[in-house]
Image (cartoon, rainbow, N blue to C red; front, side, top):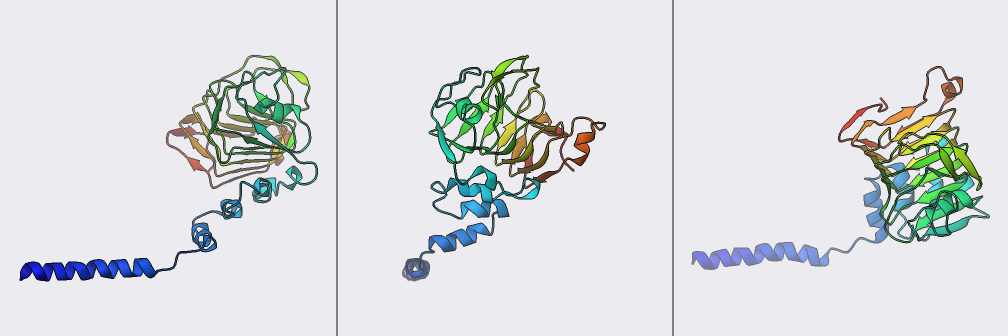
Length: 272
């Protein structure tokens, strides 16, 4: 009798769970996006709520905030879409299909994406041209184990969705400059991303770690910069905003630092 009663209770308990599950209508994607959107910050909600964001990648430029402002100079008429297919690097004569060709050789508005996951070992620092977007969404792209990124006398640049790590100091040498011409470059510290006399720069959703100097330097009069949604980890010196208290041009520097995550194992030079 006790066994029959137990089976009766169990059947009704299962039915009580199953019926609401079977007859509860599915959420539409719009409703799901609305619910998920409650957990996203204003930048992510701007583009992640679009289920077709891969088809509308340039919409990202309208999602920035802070001192960088909207990055609408990076989109619109004349925009060139360029896909990285080759992880190799030649700092003097880059091949079509490599990151350096898209970021340094092509001039004007260029939106760079990646064909697949890849690890790029830069032979020399990558000097990014004005009006360039490097968009790593949807793939796993590492820039690692040697030289890394420099934004030198350039403006209107988006760096999004990259993993930049194990960056090493570089001796002086020749490199393709941000104007598409080969130029001499002095000694470079082992920073993940270094800004020198740069403006209107948005650095978003990157993971930076384990570099020999720092992870992000904003120096030499650089301004109108937004640093958002990045993960800084495993680093002694994390972020440098202004290289010298006596450098007059850095006194008017404007940098927004928002929605970033610091740690584990970050020791100094974090915004506070």
